[in-house]
Image (cartoon, rainbow, N blue to C red; front, side, top):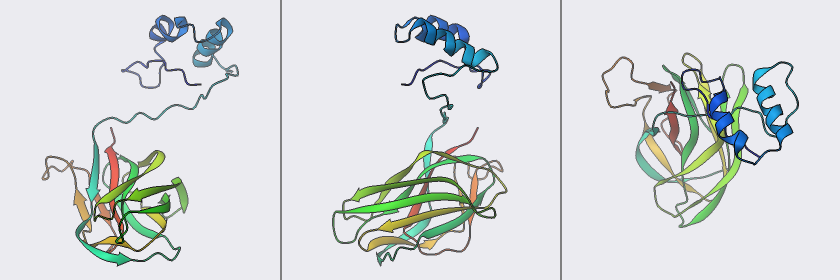
Length: 212
């Protein structure tokens, strides 16, 4: 069960007690004892046990955007069970929510895929998902998403990994080493992403939200 309680916009981690009291607490969804435990959970320590997921939800602000790395699309990239990787860093905080992957050159097909974001130097997995996607045989990219956004911080090296199982696919060529995103390309505060020199890859897009 999930119970939505509004948060004070001036203090992102502070529960708006009044809004919760006038809304969810009087909705009839919870028993009286559950309402008491809910308020105690957010106001006292030690906290009582509650029968709902108490992990904070991630709230993304701003528009979603995609960084398209490659300038040209070619055919026939095969898969042997090894992962395709891009090592990158950014100059401002962002959250990556998924990848855009190329699909089959042989018409509509299904792929199984594992996607990961690693902190390169520490070899720590920050986010991963075992999932799949269906492609339509075109040279378009197809969205594969993480279960939760992955926070990416400046001045840290990360690796984006995708391990696909399926038929030969399209892939990108003439990959750029640096991207800029945002409306004002000359601004010194424009988010920027740098990669190693990887000129060919089936991972075309990084789907992200700019951090606050």
